[in-house]
Length: 437
Image (cartoon, rainbow, N blue to C red):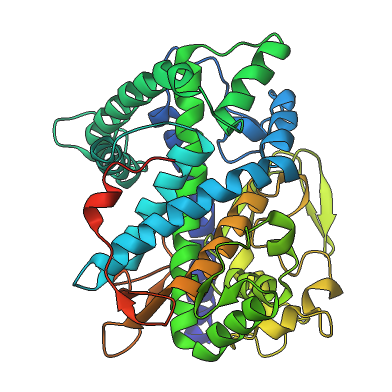
C-alpha cells in the first residue's frame, strides 16, 4: 500500500512538472517574441506591438491599411514584374556556385540568395557587391542574437544584436535616401515603393525610422524560411533524381527546355510557371515534408471550443504545422517524398481545410506565400535547366528543425555549370561583381 501511494505521488509530481514545463514554454515563447519586437525597434518607433500576432506590425489589428498594401505587393501583376529580377538573381547565384572549385554550403548560400532577393527585388535597393556582403554579414549577426536575453553588457548577445541592428539601419537609411536617384528607367514598383505611396494615400506617411524598421521586417520575413525551403528543395532533388528528370521532361514538353538549357526565345512568364503542374506538386511536397517553420502561437481573441475543450479569451494557443502534416489522415505514407500526392488525380491536400498549411491558415496565413512559392518554382526551373549538382559527402546529413528546418552541416554540394550540350562550364566570377538588378 505504501508502494502504491509512493507511485501515485510520483505520478502526480510528474504530471505537475509537465504542466509547469508547458506553462513555462508558452510564457518563454511569448517573452521571446516580445524581446524580438523590442530588440528590433528604436524607442521612437510608433508602430505598436499588435495583438494576437507574432510581433509583425504588418498583420496587426492597428494597421488594417497595410493588408491592402500587401494585396498590391503580392498581386499577379506585381509578381509578374518581380519574375525577371528574381530569375536574374537566381541565375547569378547559380553561376557563382558553379564557379566555386569546392563544394558549397547550400544552406548558407541559400541564406545569401534569399537576402539578395529581398534587398534587390523586394526593396529595389541598388547596392554594390561589397555593400551586399557587408549587409548580409551584419544581418546574420542581428538574426543570430535576436533571441538573446536582454542583458545589456559588453560582449553579450543582446549588445551584439543591438549593435548589428544600428549598423544595419544606417546602411538601410542610406539605401532609402538614394532610392529616388536609382528609380530612373525602373519598370516596376517594389514593395517599399508601394508601402511608401500607400502610407501617403492613407494619411499615415511613415517616418525614416519606421521605414527602416519596416524594411528590416520585410527582409526578416523573406530570409530564414525561404533559405530553408530552398535548401530542402535542392536536397530533395538530390535524393530523388527521378523527380528532377520528370521536371526536365515537363519543361521540354512545354518548349522551355531545349538541348539542356532554357530556350532564350521562350520568355519565362508567370502564367507559364503556374501552368507547370508537376513543378507545383514538387514544391508542395517539399513544403509538406520539410516545412520551414514548426508552428506558432496565437492569442485567442474570444472564447471558443475545440474538440470539446473550451479555450478562454486571452489564452495563448500553440499549433504545430509539422505534426499536422505528419498526422493528417488525408496523406498516405507521410514519410515518403511523393509529389504525385498533389496531382489532380489524387489531390490529397484537397480532402480537408487545414490538413496542409505550410504557410499557416486562416486570415493570418503568410502574406508572402505567393512570392515564396514563385521564388522556389524559378529556382527549381533553373536547377533543372542550367546546373548539374551532386552531394559532396558520403551520406545525406541529419536535418534539424530549430530555428528552421536545415541540415546540420548546411548540405555540402558541388555545382557544375552546363552549356547547351550538357558539358560542364565555369562562370567568370569577375563578371558578376558589378551585377545589379
